[in-house]
Length: 183
Image 1 (cartoon, one colour):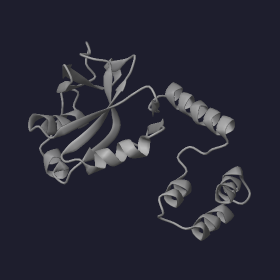
Image 2 (spheres, rainbow, N blue to C red):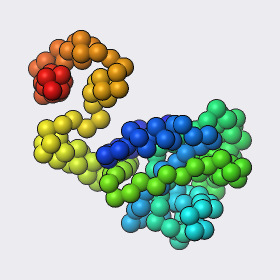
Image 3 (spheres, one colour):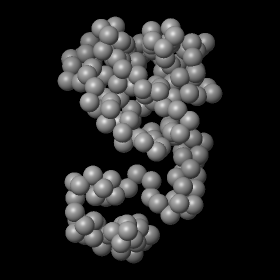
């Protein structure tokens, strides 16, 4: 599950996600932030996660839980047991805490080579747009191109990519898809 206002970028991200997908229970991703009080935050005892606290006044670490979660088939039943928080909201951290309590929560930390952009504010949405634009202009590569991901993963063939490129023939996205096929 990924929250719709989150963007992830980084070399090796597919391998990190595949590792999480192969695991049991739940896997979350910790990301070092300067303002942890805005997020669900991981508490540690050494390398071991001991708690997840939603928007703490005093954060136990600078590791926020990103909006990307791998949850097993027990998640719907667990979610039915979640009660509203003091803020009156159903918190994902409560659901994740149930995995932590039974020892089935895995945490992967995303290091300096990754970018996590939470676009939940006007300013952060603009920052994300500028980040993606800079990458696209500098590298000449699209960020988060579904056709490219599907093609490289062997889920679609070149003809399917060409058909999609024709749909976007009048813009740079269609041109990108054709250039991608040319290698």
